[in-house]
Length: 166
Image (cartoon, rainbow, N blue to C red; front, side):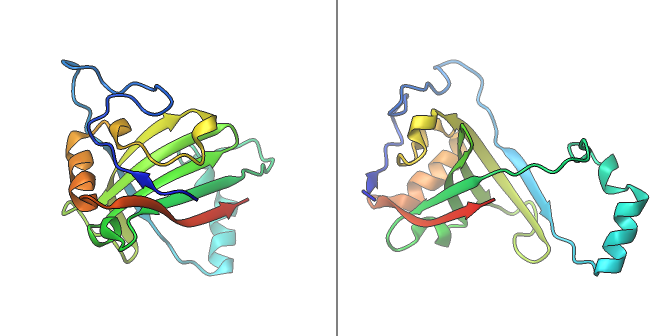
C-alpha cells in the first residue's frame, strides 16, 4: 500500500466531497461512549429471555440474523504518532458504504478499562475511496482535526492495521 501525505488545509477530498463552506456553522464531533460488560452464559440467557436487550433503541430487530462484512483500515505514521496522542484514524467499508472516522480520547471520561469515552468525527466517502488514504479535510470538528494534524506533523500517513469482520 502506498503512503499518503496529510493535507489539512484542503477544502475538498480527492473525490471532490466538500467540507463545510466558509461561514457555515462549526460542527462539534459526536461522543462515543462504549460500555463493555462481562456476563456468564446463564445470566446472558436470562437477559435475552426477559427481552431487556430488544427494548434498547437500535437493537430491536425482526428476529432474523443478518451478516455484515466490515473491513477497517487504520492509518497512522510509521512511529505511531496518532496512537501516542490518543487518536485513531480509520476508514471502514460496510458493503457499499465507506466511512472515515477520527476518534480522540479526551479528559471528559475514561478511556480504557470497561468504559471508553471518545470524541468521534465521521464522514461518508465514495465507495471508490475505500482503500484511499484518509482525507483530514473531511473532519468537520476543527479542534479534532487540529489535534490530528499536530500529532502527524511532517510525517506520512501509512496503513497500519486492517481488520475484516463478518
